[in-house]
Amino acid sequence: MSVDLKARAAQAVELAQQAGAEDAWSTVSQSRNVQFEYRDGSLEKVKDTTSQSLGIRIYAGGRYSSHSTTDLNAERLQDFIEEAVAITAALEPDEYRRITPEALFLDRPGDDLDLVDASVQALEREQRVAWCRALDEVSHQHGDVISATSGVYDGTQRSASASSNGFLDEQRSTYCWFGASVTLRDQGDKRAEDGFYAGGAHVADLPGPEEVGRKALKRTVSRLGSEKGPTVKASMVVDARAASSLIGRLLGPANARSVQQDRSFWAPLIGEQAFSKTLTIVDDPLIVRGLASRRYDDEGISARALPIVEDGIVSNIYVDTYYGRKGDLRPTTGSPSNRVVRPGSHSLAELLSEVGEGVYVTSWLGGNADGTTGDFSLGLRGHMIENGRIGRPVGEMNVTGNLRDLFSRLELLGNDPYPYSSTLAPSLVFSDVDFSGA
Image (cartoon, rainbow, N blue to C red; front, side):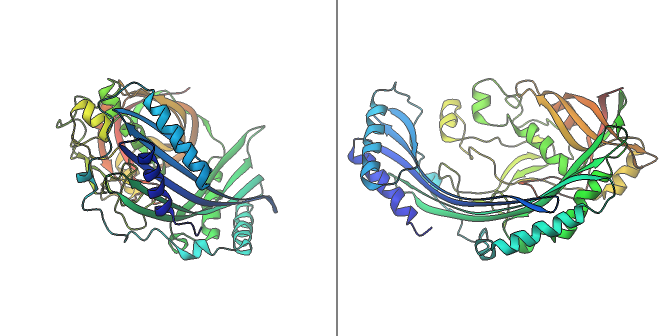
């Protein structure tokens, strides 16, 4: 990990220009990823991998191409880049493909996001095995456990980028996750399966492995006796952990590429009151220790908070430089970071009490959403809400509708954002949702 990544990235840009490119953008990345998995009392899998790569974007004669390699040998790299420039010269011109303007590099935040934990970099085998054993022991504390798999996943990541128009910077981060997946014996030949994992940039921010293992087992126990849910129109409470996926489906087509290609229901929504006034979403790359925090995106655009939806009104979408030019849109950023949904003031128990009767969704089981129309059909599992409390477990049911319509009927939000996701969403309450089941 001692390679000077910035020097390598700058060298690649220089080589591209020497080969005839007017402009070039290079990114050199290096990572280490460690995986320990423990199954039913035994260490089952250990994997420790390191990788490095170089990617380069070539701009030559109004033409563009991108290339990548894992071979950073100086002599072979020169040959690789010369060939990349020659290939680019044979392509069709594209007037919209130009290097990121220098103005978008300005006001880049300092390196104060606290994304590197030295204790992750110093983790030893013994600590990883001890965490696995603790998870394994707790997750087996039920008489009907068939099997449980525990895991610890950690790593370090570095990348540096350089451009022919003055960009040169580096980003670093660490991560550590651990948790367990549990399978229980249920009625007849049925099995109940669930689990829980926690993770972040710093080990100190995580709960202990015993607590994580208990949550994994508790979630699985709650699935015992699950039956096929009913066909009904009812209120839907989406658990905070499941809410992040639903928000992701909503925002999936909220980008300039989809809009420009007429594949997004967001196209006519900018500036409009498109959703419930209770919905506010901000893309915030500057959260200290955030799972998707960064100082710049992969085009070098300086990181800053980007309001997407404010009190139900669409303020922005994700706009990269290429599709920004094609669609005459101001560049914001081409890729998401931390998505923050403004929470409400109700606890989950208060939300359930307020709803009274309905369906409480704890996880999604496949399905699809059409980015062009917003129509969706999602499999789910969860519980019926009975007398304002979590009732019997249900599954084998779908929820269908339209995402814009669904989020227009968002009534309440919890005060419980799920912390182990780059989408910090609380529990959500929707009215008059269509469910199909028995």
